[in-house]
View 1 (cartoon, rainbow, N blue to C red):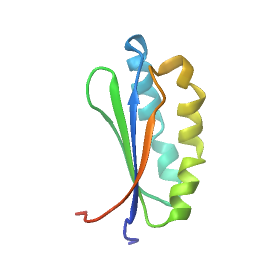
View 2 (cartoon, rainbow, N blue to C red):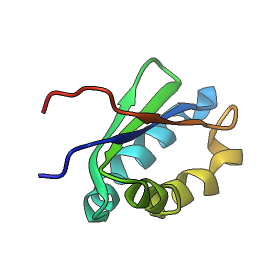
View 3 (cartoon, rainbow, N blue to C red):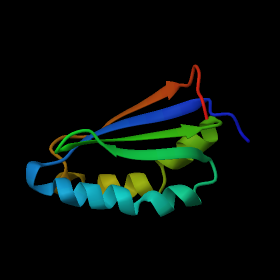
View 4 (cartoon, rainbow, N blue to C red):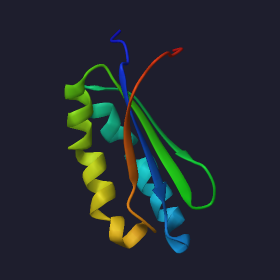
Length: 100
């Protein structure tokens, strides 16, 4: 198994009346994450009524870059004006320790 070395944390704030649509978009993106060879793990979570987050891990920079340029990002950013209250906060991080 490839060791996760990099991560993306994306914070997503839905418009109050669009939270259900954001939830549907994120849950429907799971099969797309499965298709991504360089994505080791992928989580979409709901923090409160309108705040969501995505956390993904990668073994290398190529996997991370492919994900940022992939179908999930395109689907989310393609509907950002319609669904989101603000631009998603997308942060990359180095994984210091993990348990799998």
